[in-house]
Image (cartoon, rainbow, N blue to C red; front, side):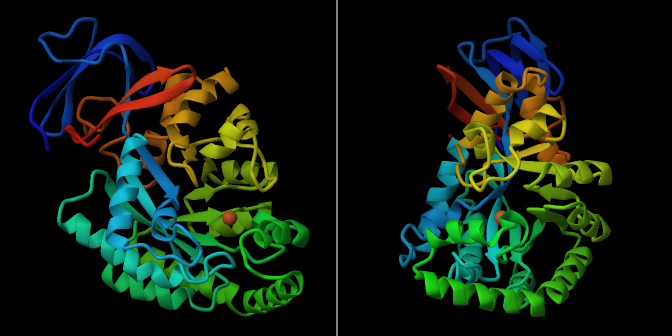
Length: 381
Ligand SMILES: [Fe+2]
């Protein structure tokens, strides 16, 4: 933790308003004072740049891109974690939930088996105090996978988890309600021929029949026992949402239809959508657009999903796309909203007493540029 620091001559995005020119004092890793106009003494001149709270990212699988940069390549896990950490920090993220897959899926047959290697690497660099960002764990559990509960059990015996999502990517389910969409999506990601893909689908349907229900029950119970926040994934219907609510799920991760989003809102679940979905103006797999949910007041949390830099971009872009949303409201979708949904009440806002997690942002045209990043008052980028 850094000692005293004073940030002067910056626009400040507070939870409910923007101070066009102001200053922030920090001490012992916390924000101690906020003011408008000239700073009381000489501080770091932010040259009119904008200060926003450090971003809180709940769902990024980007570690996989560093660990498995080619389908059959596995990079050194420690080196992969450090490169990923640097990329996350330079995207303005100060708290990240590393998404680790539990249970194999069509496009990640062996990544699941590498779970413990990645978990071990993260723990070793965390213990050596080598990480820039505050890393937490999001276990992404593929409920129809035969090995999901065994892997979760092995992981939870050794490492903590802070968020757990229940996924079902079986052909014909949720994200891919039609088999044709599923085939189009996975054909690009797997080495299978068309006939092999058909056989694979049959096998997936059989494992779903056998495992999805009992595994879901096991995982919900494990999360309850360990006090881990639960997220649903790709809910498509009101029935999916009812099941989520019944299981004590707090976050609806990427609902795929307007109906599922409406039901989530009704059930009091926080709705999380992908930031790339905002920037691209729609979902890459043909599901509901995040912007449409935002327009109807149903977007609580953004996640960078597969592009870390998208989180800050989407938060700055949202007010332009949906004028009813102010910049402070948009910034809340990437800071205090995800923090509160996961029980982190010490961060996520520029407010006295909160952690001094701060991002200094300049602009290049419409693109936000991360200049400096501070975690608990200490500069990490
Ligand atoms: Fe999905």
